[in-house]
Amino acid sequence: MTRVVLVPGVLALLPEYAGLEDPVAELRAACLGAIAWLESGPVTVLADPQGARVAKALLEACGGFEAQAPGRLRTSTSGGTAASYLVVGNGSACRSERAPGHLDERAAAYDDALRAGLASSDVNGLDLDLGRSLLASLDGIARLPEVLPDGTPAQIDYDDDPFGVQYWVMRWQA
Image (cartoon, rainbow, N blue to C red):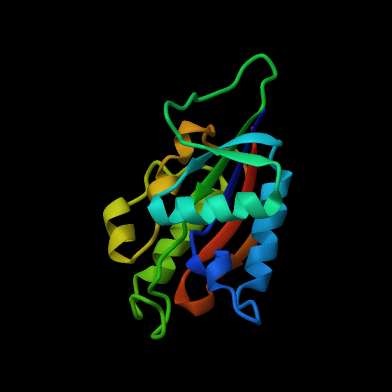
């Protein structure tokens, strides 16, 4: 069995960025709940460097998890062995005037297409160049086909764009 969780790599999820009032409390709760759903034991993290920092902090906050570097990934598991993956990435950062990348009218359509691909674990047609121009974090998301077959439905725990950045928390089981 393979379990995969997607969380955003937003720095506000790091303990050192938390203030007296948590600006991403709902997102944090969704991330921690999804990570707790993973099989205990080693978790392979698929992320860029910032996402890896966020993944490490979230895994530590959940306790009982050991982050592993991606290395060589298998496309499936056999013999009843469980595999857990934490994918870190997010949609565009150009959804409003106050977004880090300011408003880009292409952002909403891009995020809609990305959401649809993620919902069915089919991100093979993802336009990485457009996504990067919209400041999307796609390194981990682009590797999703390595760990899940296309058509695996997602459970969506969080779908919102606070601060003009599209964040999702999703889970897959295959």
